[in-house]
Amino acid sequence: MPMPLKPLSRVAAIAVASLAISCSSADENAAPVATPSVTLRTQIAAIGSPIEMTYRFLVAPNAPVLDGDHMVFVHFLDTDGELMWTDDHEPPTPVRQWKPGATVEYARTMFIPKFPYVGQTRVEIGLFSPATGERLPLAGQTRGQRSYEVATFEMRLQSDSLFVIFRDGWHETEVGGEGSGLEWQWSRKDATLSFPNPKRDSEVYLQLDQPVRPFDTPQRVEVRAGTEVVDSFPLTPGQPELRRLNLSTAQLGAGPTVELTISVDRTFVPATIPALKSSDSRELGVRVFRAFVQPL
View 1 (cartoon, helix red, strand yellow):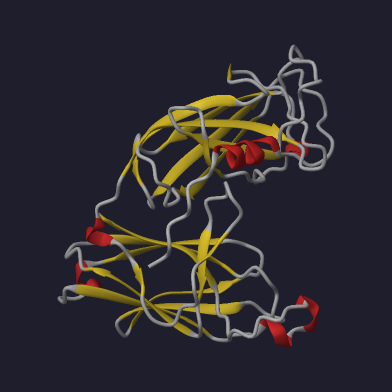
View 2: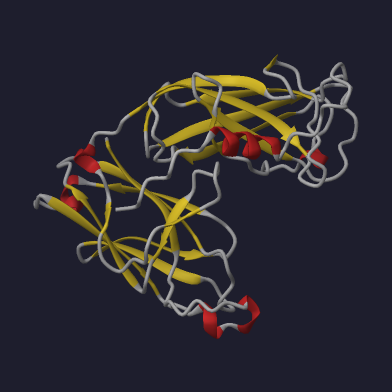
């Protein structure tokens, strides 16, 4: 099974939080460029589960032209105000294209990391320039340093009854930088996931990507439940993919355990691709971040 992330130290959390902070000398009374809000699909979420978040920015009627690139920072904090993880991202409509008086709205699914915490979780967001770290002034409940509280939810332990096991055909678990909450496993050509059979219709979430461009055309990924193909799609390099598979009770089978096989039409070895400048001699298929089963 994927290894849990180590808890962030207080110093590490502060360091991560400070990456996007560069507004101490800015005018805190500057006119807000937008009013942010976030709607959560659920107010209770289990560790390791997906949570669907709808972001909405009401751009101010007098908002100036926002030159340069800006990202949305999203911080998840515990009841002591300690940063646990982040989900910084670029909005689908670049901030430089936002028009005065417009409403920018989009949905994003985030998986709660395997973090050693249960309790109320606070969500704070803002806009910042990755080039300078400067944060833009927004309207709303500020927590200081142009970070705005937009939502809370209860974080709970997940029942182990439907834990997904990365069984055969996987390389060792790797983790992202502190505060990212990311972990993944590379597949080989064929790799198997297994989980206890819920014995009812279920939705399976698969979050995966191909971070490099090893081929001239995208790889083709196939997912099978037993011998039945339940999903097939091209995986474009550099574009994370979230697949949601609706599996019927019949497709899950009658046995106590369900096995899903993820197969790719081509694998690659990083060490054989000069442009990657890598010594990695592993045979790699695709990178899988999350696999989650939700009975319906």
